[in-house]
Image (cartoon, rainbow, N blue to C red):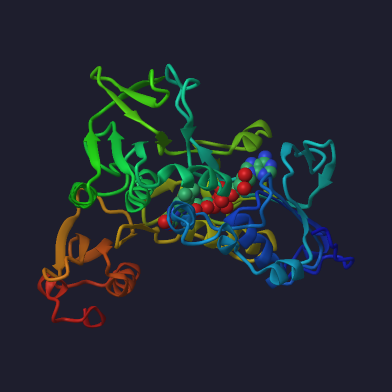
Length: 421
Ligand SMILES: Cc1cc2nc3c(=O)[nH]c(=O)nc-3n(C[C@H](O)[C@H](O)[C@H](O)COP(=O)(O)OP(=O)(O)OC[C@H]3O[C@@H](n4cnc5c(N)ncnc54)[C@H](O)[C@@H]3O)c2cc1C
């Protein structure tokens, strides 16, 4: 799609007249939202969306769930219907890679040699799956899961009769494990830390996840280091563990985290620290370059520090915020972090940043096993985690955002609706 809008920009901001070219690098979720927001906000200038994937902007969460299981086609992950995408009048460059940002000349340089000028540049380059550099990595096929192609390559390897080792007990690893198990595969999860999702949830939730996966027949090895990989005599793969044992399997999946794609920014001299540093306006250290999504490290009042959020919510909302900010609107993007994961029949949602110092109040439905755990400082809810409790969590979110004092007993009491807290 290369249809251009001939009109000169008429953005709703003070310096609208000088913004004629906006370039977005990365046509993922954040980039897609930035593009549609720019148009929705009235930007009629040249809008170039450059992405090195062949697909139009799409969402990734289904790639480890419905797309991986075959319940949904990859096309269903698209951010917009084809007509709506067409109607944006973008200069869309699929399968095109930006090699360099030339800040002095205000242009980005593509792999094919083309230079694309910008007045404002929005970096939405996301991240890539972390790889391992251990002995034997080149001896066996190793799957990771970030793209549609990754999901398509992995899906056939997960069926009944297959054995799968998932290295990494974080969100992607656990979702892959759950999908594989539901497809009938034998699954082992190998996690170096002493508990699952150690970086993101309190120990009680890690225990809950462990029980869930073990109940479904997945072997979960905690505190288990991987020392390498090997091809077994029968042609299958082996995951070699630090204790000297080996796990033989048909398929190995690495779910060991994400590396932010911040190289372009670093090479262009923008401030980076585990991602591209931005302020609450999504501005980088160059006022004409903004960043959003998985690649951006932003201040967050709820966390009390800068952080890089890897979530559906942040990709969308920060993409929107960056677009508005590029047009000169006042933006103060500091969202209450929200993340969800679906594993087996469980929808787990996390609002805020639970911390060890928080007091926990439990609202549990013993009959169904559903629950919300509230994390409080004093009598104010700071964070909440719920299992199949989406409705209650919406009210919990309100309590957190309004910093409203609560009563522990009423919070725990199922007979007191969340709307009456
Ligand atoms: C399998 C999976 C499951 C997930 N499940 C959940 C979930 O259940 N809940 C949740 O909240 N979040 C989930 N997430 C996280 C969420 O999908 C991401 O946070 C979100 O996709 C980030 O969007 P983004 O636009 O920042 O990055 P991306 O979607 O990664 O888009 C970045 C794009 O930029 C491209 N790019 C990078 N460098 C260049 C370059 N130099 N030139 C051109 N293009 C470039 C990349 O190839 C990519 O297409 C999941 C993620 C994955 C991978």
